[in-house]
Image 1 (cartoon, rainbow, N blue to C red):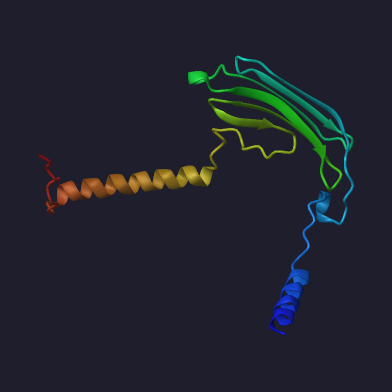
Image 2 (image 1 turned 180 degrees about the vertical axis):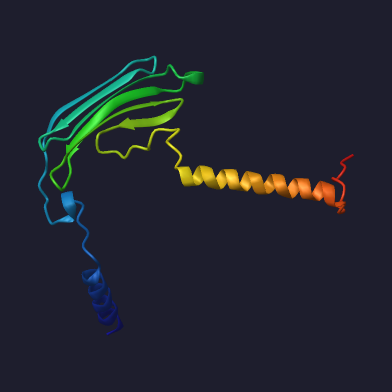
Length: 153
């Protein structure tokens, strides 16, 4: 009787476990996407290239050489696909001693620096500098005591 109870409990737990789907978009699709091209080359000196294309429009091209500092790999390439919203995504990149540097029209771009500083900010900086100047001149002329700076041996 114990065996039947334990078996029934384990079966109930197994059936209640979430069923994960690893398909595109998290749906129940089990459609397999054919690979149209998969070219991979590598030589004995550390150079490589990879070119992959799938039937649903995903493309990847990457090539690298050990030309970086201390023989690190310098890599460049691109990848492209269509987002779930239907937007074509195309990203070019370089990865070297300066890190991963992607380029795409879809990536946010920081404003150029130095950007113009608004006048109210310049006014505030001038005001703070004037306060500092007044404060330092009043301290030196007031005869007030300030502790000496620390001495380090």
